[in-house]
Picture 1 (tube, rainbow, N blue to C red):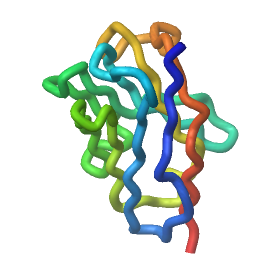
Picture 2: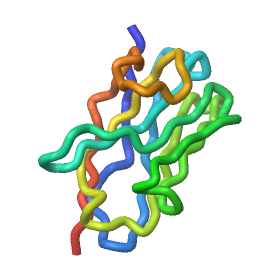
Picture 3: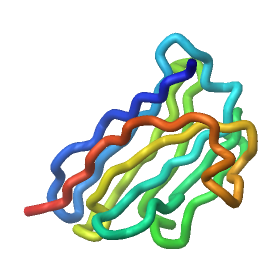
Picture 4: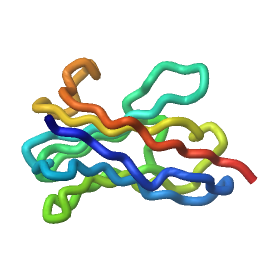
Amino acid sequence: QLQLVESGGGLVQPGGSLRLSCSAPGFTLDYYHIGWFRQLPGKEREGISCISRYGRRTNVADSVKGHFTISRDNAKNTVYLQMNSLKSDDAGLYYCAAGRTFCPASRAMYDYWGQGTQVTVSS
């Protein structure tokens, strides 16, 4: 069964950047559309960005537009989330998910989820 692995989280100062990666060792990710989600402390999990199988279509939530960029490199079997100008409000657990529908309205439409990578923003 496909298992997604997120990496790249960590501690960053306010205003700093991180690039998260989502991979699926042993599987081909270009069969799937990919979404990035985050769960901030005390809040529901929210979708923040998604990308189609070959990267031709992307969506970014208004809450992170202009600061976060999604991309993928199918040759490396990896999807990225570049996060710039990070604020304390961005701190939380970040997940990627894979599915057969591009940017579905419900996260239940995603078939596979990673375990998440923690992002901490603090001086």
